[in-house]
Length: 226
Ligand code: GLN
Image (cartoon, rainbow, N blue to C red; front, side, top):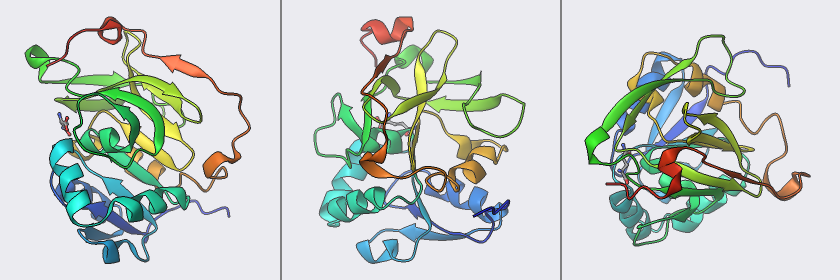
């Protein structure tokens, strides 16, 4: 399909805990219908899903108690765009340090929670994001952010801090960002994300040989985190 605009999609935002309202506002400003997803039934008929930032342990607990773990895994496997921001990225990762219950575990990334330490609770950085339309760098807001220590298998690093730390990754229809585009006025990532998965086949169809990409920054080398 050669659609140039994605307006008019029905986009779910997992609304168990965290900053789901800010995602909804951004999507609505772009002309999309939004659904607060709290139960399995709310996943029906969605074109895409966002898992917001918040507290990954709390969101994981509520996913389990609401019986949503398998349905969310199935949604991710179905090929529609799914994006995890910050805590959401933690929940999508196959490998996480210090998450005491299962997440969705669908992306070939290893993340470290609260990786930037207490001294730098939050910060902003201008990023080049591979594939994102537009010339300008993307102003990224990090809040008690995780870092992506490694991408492996089918995932690809698409943005790094100046020191080499991986802060965004993509795997076909799946997107993980350590930062919060919903807290900026730049709608490019929300718009771009809605087209993911339509440009390449989902799932294990990818032909690339297994690779390993690591965070190369000082923070990736075993800083104890906060
Ligand atoms: N530190 C949080 C966690 O580990 C994530 C923070 C966020 O989503 N802004 O779950």
